[in-house]
Image 1 (cartoon, rainbow, N blue to C red):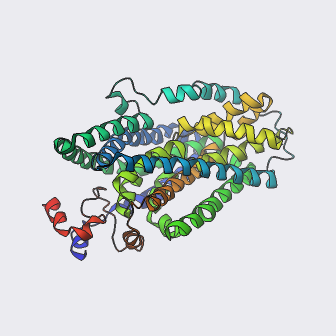
Image 2: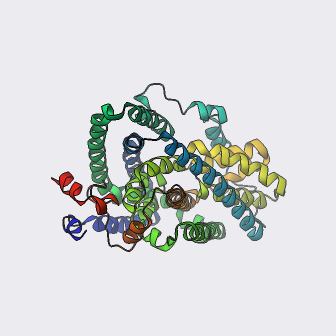
Length: 452
């Protein structure tokens, strides 16, 4: 094991993430002191997120195909997927309930007069309805062609095709092994390109933060401080309270160590305000953590569309805030009906910056149209709240991967502890788990062959 660590290249990526911190601070100052220039550099953030997004479909395709194709029994994949979906449904309901409780207790919008708020709700509602209903969402999972699933940017389409290819290779047996080896080489190339793109993270973070501060100013944040603080605290309670307790009870893994292990991913999300920017790294890190590739390949991509704990909390508290601020509070029955609708509607817009705001507007228009104009009140701070949403969604998917791995016995918990105790560092240069996973302990010779 020490020999493997000695062969690790020197990690210089800490300079990258220090650069992200500096860029965020610089972006805040530029947006505050020179708001017009801050808005002008906004496309830098959009361009960086788009660079990350273009790599997501190849990452998911390679990971899932390799995971499923190397498993002999298709029933194992089905068991992992079934447990994951059941868990996602339960945790979304828990997040919904927590948001309802906090929102009703604090009532952050009470006493406000927002009659003169700009009417931006209708525009956002149209954006939400343009995405279609439940059947349109299900239909959109099937791509037009086999190749288009990797070019449209749809996570679910890439997941669907990858599963088909994985099961086909599984059925081919030894005949499909050359194809699997080719896809394994392709995965290394994809992660290498991704590692190159990540060096642009400080530029993207600077543009994104400067843009939002330039548009809203610091006063907009101060006026709605109670809602923001309440939302952030609720997300922290959910992550360290609910998820942390569950993680320790099931897997005996500390949520604090897991958060420390994923610290760089949290920083990347904070800078880009999108959990999708960290999806490829989460897949790589969960494999290195000791979870089998099949489990990671099924749970993580699926979780990005169905495990939206942060979005559930946001939709709950934002709806209550708008209703109270307009003097038209929601009854308990209306709260449950409206928010259950929103949770379902949000599934097709996972990981997209600003999608939560459009879903909120669409839900209000469907259930309480008179509240729609109140959406304009939180447009200014939605970017800041979307960061907490993304961080919570990301945390929920990381925890779900460990939990499902424990339930299906596809995780090496001893290896997990070694990784979280920093005895087995993650290879930041390649992000590919060659010789750094649990199998290394059992097959040390295989590592040398791969490295050679």
